[in-house]
Image 1 (cartoon, rainbow, N blue to C red):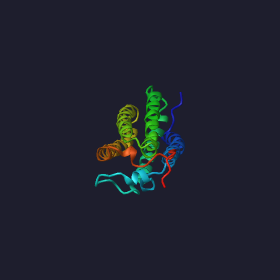
Image 2: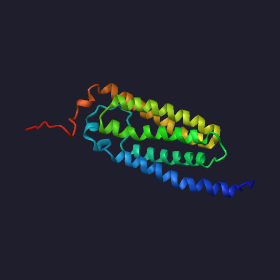
Image 3: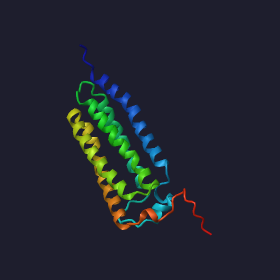
Image 4: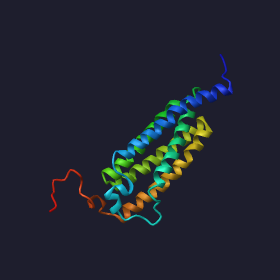
Length: 183
């Protein structure tokens, strides 16, 4: 059995990171492009928002940083070939990413604030479980998940407050498929 050198391990990690980081950035970008987001979305612009809502520019910056960190964490786990938990960790990560990528179309496209809130809670619980599982494989990968968990708390709080401030939010803007004509 041949033992890999530290340099070989670093290169293997970098090869995975070159794939995982751009992949997660691309998936996040595509999810955000499925529907208009932020002030470009007339429904969202019409919503009452809490006073501490970050400016529109903060969301793509925060998510870009988070997706880079998630990509690095995933690369660390994929590169941990000797771990029996590796497959489960990758699967759990993928499931939480599916929920993550569904949030934007659910909130901004379908105008389903309550279900978007449920999605954030599910996403947080899945991400927390992923973080603990990552920690059993690579401590550094778990630490890279911490900013994501913190941001999910912020996103969950904002979604909850928007839901509370806008009990009839789904009626603010008629859906694009409406046959109603305004004269």
